[in-house]
Image (cartoon, rainbow, N blue to C red; front, side, top):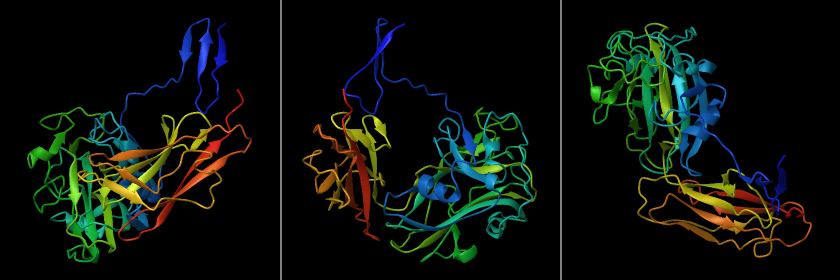
Length: 401
């Protein structure tokens, strides 16, 4: 049997040398072939908005999050890059979100919850449409710029047999607030539009015969079959929903909704790209140690810790982004310059870069101090609410060799 010798000092990662077999084991990971995986259990509605959909760092304020519909008709999905066109995000459906998972082995996948529809969705579908089994995710937000946008894909089991028809399911993104006047509740307008037009995206308006540039067939009933590993028989390409001109720092309301039309059968769903809801400038700060992001416990003399500063608005990288006024929180027990390197009072993400990293090196001082905390106060610089966030790095004594 080979013997295993631990390399010193012992840090937060695991390293082994197998002597006699001449094998070095550092880390082993395998990535399974990604495929669409939608479920309703990973996140609740508040998390779907705050932790998945919203892109705005610390600056975009969100409140009043509500969800109406069956709890299995809203959820989170991963593995969507080769099916819907982006890796992960929020899914709302007129049936179970798990029904969207491939392969496409049924032409009439259906969940009938017997739930009511929505008046705005009734109005959004031209002609006579009484909606059923609506899934509605709503929230208020305060933009820091005059435009908000996000990316999405719509898919349905009603393609291509029922396109167009009076049974075509319907969805909409309804926004209301200062300066907006439309026909929907609260004076809202629908921003789920065919690019360059004022025509709503729907099964009747985007299909195998109409606006075909924006349509992907995924079933033998369609002229072409993309054979995507998703249950829906047809989908749109990735589209962008863009708001009318907004007033920064004012509160707006958005309702994201989908429902069956005229019946309770044949599921439809809308996929919202993770992190694509962009309502203003800002930044976020993540921690990490060594090559692992999301952790904040480091050992003296071992891997380097870090705070990574990330721009949330990446549409224009021509100018540097500077965060000023960084200070040490009074609750810190680690002393910069003694326990670790000094901390600057400002940090700049250079022009042309989405992010940059503030590195933390913890010094071995051969003292038994327990876990010390390095806590930074970081002003958000938000134009609507200039608050301060705190980020923490923990430093543990070097393990005995």
